[in-house]
Image (cartoon, rainbow, N blue to C red; front, side, top):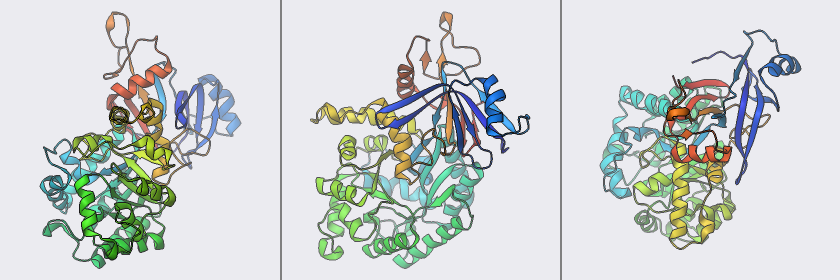
Length: 472
């Protein structure tokens, strides 16, 4: 893969979300990306390869020599550029368990599968093997930004940050904090130790003097943390202005456990809800990423909206572990920013595209369960959640998630399967399960991609202008 920092021009069809319900289709367009910043500096309509070389390059004041400008032109009617996906919730440490959840409920699954695996990654050689693979795999599915949970181990968490920087993936990296409700071999000894180790990881990432990979404060979820620890992490978040990530209302038994562990007289919260526990600890802020939110009450949703906290919708995981069907339309109606998460290994796939299609299907189950048709999400809406919605969730709104001047070039080149006469695919192309016959509208092609696409359709991936994945 190229690591050169040439100025770049991309020519072809660009598709991105402009609103929750609208995709914009830019055909015969050129986008220019600065080598020094990785940002889009020009979008030129009605521009082919000849015009790019003779008009756009001089207009930008660039040297037209082959060593300074790289041009990628694709005018095929089954290829297009799309913003990189943003995975707002996944556990890098759990990747080897993808697809392994048996018949467990959430709490049993943690003890049976999750904690033993995470604890084993204190073996750094094993951690490197796992983390290298999950980064490679998510990039191959077009994930340019990932909000990762690591483990409680400092060295292994720092390794994940180093590997993301090495591979060029944009990431939030969180050392998991937990001082209760876990096996003795996998707990922080005290709130003070948990805080100290978290600061070690924060300092390690900040000392890199870059902003591609950021630290994120990561209480595992309320039941795994004493209230003292939650408050200390809330104070740290206020002191450092860092993002926060955790889980909320994923499972009904988990919610009952929160009520048992955190009575109002203990927390001083306004009520005994899950969200109020985080709020009382100072964690429910505009920088908070709350995964799941399947069983939120009206009060909690209003509180989350008031605090401007964000929600990561994880439809594959919620279905696989039988947690429930989150009401995304209801959350959006409250004004809550929502993105998509794969939540590996509760979820079984590293693909945000898979999460998008399942978000559509889950919304239909919500509608069939008694909610009216308004609960249903469209293809356009779930693609927004996977890009611009996700950018809002991880604090990168206006930086990534679309194709606008000033945004960074986090993008993927998508290729579908063009069917020729005789029913064969065009030579040299691998469109996977997506077959395009040539008579489909662009809206129909996108729908086919959402419902049938996979990593075979992701031909190239860039982060901040750097090519980080190429399908051979």
